[in-house]
Each structure stands twice: as structure tokens, then as C-alpha cells.
Image (cartoon, rainbow, N blue to C red; front, top):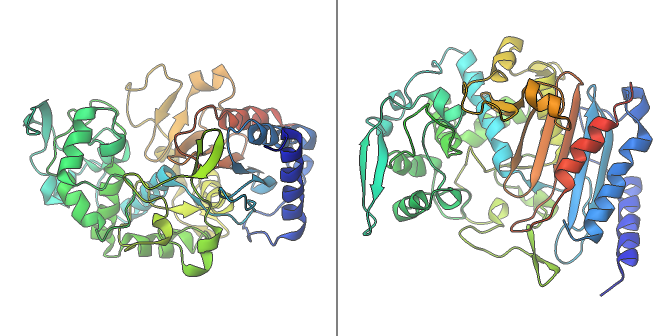
Length: 427
């Protein structure tokens, strides 16, 4: 095994080659010296140290980090390897963003809401009749059957946006009963290379019991997959087409896809895990990690399906910081953005330091006072393959870190990114 010092030296050389000699992805957010945006170059350099230490300690095999302030990119660097073969990451690398898809789906829902297509408290059964007469799980029997009781109220579109519908998440559900029920029903939980559509999966999901009565608790769920199908019904377009024409093209998110075109597939970063201390490409389990570039490519998951880059996602987040507009293209009203970020779940997360709006988790006054989370109103989320982001409207600050790992512990880069970025504000 090579000494750690030599390994770090190699990664440094690879990184320097990338930023000096590789054509970077075109961005609507121009690059700017940190000091011109009220940030400290010397303090942002701690991100370099953090990344190299994480590589040397094998917390991650590689990462790309981006920081933007006042609509300008002040830090954008790549470190480490894109796959187990050791090919270097670069600034054009594409990552599976998984649950970061949810905010884009929520945005699409709210775009249609602005057009007067529905009300947020409409029952989803008004548009997807299979959800009528929802049931709550009572008990799971040894033979796999179960008993239920009628839900106290219908599932609404607002419940689906806020993860309060009571729908579960199958293979990654925290309740083993729901793992069994979803598996037996053949629900597609996250990703697939099989020939199935979101309509087929959602209609099967609609027949299954709920964790709890809608509106009574927060249960992370496939509700955004339901809303992906709902978008198709309301708009009359396949979900991938609606995203492309209504969001990705106006915001120039040119490297964001459900399934990568052939010319982009070599840019996809491998999902990696550790075996006996070494990085290996993650094997096929209940899903094939190569789903964005192989298989039938018919399943447009509104909850987990997209792949993207830090630049593309920064442009999406900047649209929210700009109150719904970027590069002259308005996709949401200022008034809509304001209430998307308001508390939509009441006291369910009371005392946690955050609330959930209609698209994101949002830091509240308590969370801001604890430090390291940003100002009150900072919105955030992450993805199944170890991607994270935050956007602080008060400071006009975005932080994004993208990695591709599974079943790996000890990664401290996400919280360190936040600490370093907020401490680098110097205006």
C-alpha cells in the first residue's frame, strides 16, 4: 500500500490538472474572487485541507464542492477518484442526486399550482382515484397479510409534499413491517433498470396501508413519486419532458437527467463502498447502481431519479435565492417561494431546530442560534448516495458537496463544509 503522503500528493496533482486544463461546465453563475463576494480565500482554503484529509483517512474516495455567494461561484473544486479504478473526478462529473430530486419535483408541483390547476389541500384521490378510502396499518400477520383501519382523513397534495401522508418507503423504511409489505407488493422503492413506469408503481402503492393518519406525523416517504405521476396527469406530459422544458432548459441545467444520453455516460461517477479497507465499486443489490445509463429507462422517479452536477444544482438553488427567477427566466413567483419555505408541518418537528416547508427542510431561529446551520430560513436536503446542499437566503450563500458512496461510515465532510463555509463570510 502506498504511503498516505504519496496518495495525497497524487490527488493534489490530479486536482491541479483539472482546474488548470479541463474545460469546465458552463454556468449561469459566473466565477468571482471570494473577496469580491465578501468571502475569505484563506478560510475557504480549509475546504482543500478537509478534502485531502478525508481522502487520506478514506472517509470518501472523492468529492466535488461548490460555494456560491451573491449569485457568483467563489469555490468549485474536485478531489479524488471517480471510480475504483482511480480515474480522477473533474468539475464536469455527474452524480446521482437521489432525494435531491424531491425539491425539483416539489417545484414542478408548485409551478402547476400557480397556474390554477389544483388546490394544495385537494385529496390526491381526486386525480389518482386509487388513493380513495386510504387505510392505516393495524397489524402485520405472520403469513404476510395485514389488518387495517380507515384513515381519519384523505391524503392531500400538501401531505405528499411534506412527508406527512403516512406513505412509507419500502426497502429503506424504518419500520420492518412496511419493508415486507412493499416488497411483497412489488413496489419500486428507489431505482430500477426494469421496464416499469411511475404510473404502474404508484397505482400499486395506492392500495397499501399507511403508517399513520395523514397529517399526524412526518414519515419520509414515496410521496414525491406519487406527485411525479400527478405532474404527468395535470400537465399531460411525461415527467422527464416537463422537467426538461419547464425547469432544466430555462435554468440551463444542461447536465441534469433521469437517464444520461450516450455522450454523457462517461461522466457518471461510480458509487463506491469499502471492502477490507479499499474502495470498490458498489455491487448490485435491490437496485443496479448503473441505472442512469442502462436498462429500460422508463421509470421517472420524482423522489429519487435524477443525476446532476454541483453547478446545475447551484443554479436551481440560486433561483430560490432570487425569489423564483434566474437569467431572466421566472419559474415561480416571489410570493410562492416565500410560502414554500414557511413551516407546513406545525409542531411535528418542534424543538428540532428546523421545520419542513413544501420542498425543503428549513432552519428556524432555534437551529440558527445553535450555530453551524446558517441563518434562520436556510433551506437544505441531501441524497441517498451522499450528496448534500444548503442555501442561506439572508447571506445569499450556497454550499454543495457531492460524493457517491454507500454503506460507509465516518464521513465528516458534510458538517465540516457548513462550518468552514459559514466561517468564511468576511464582509
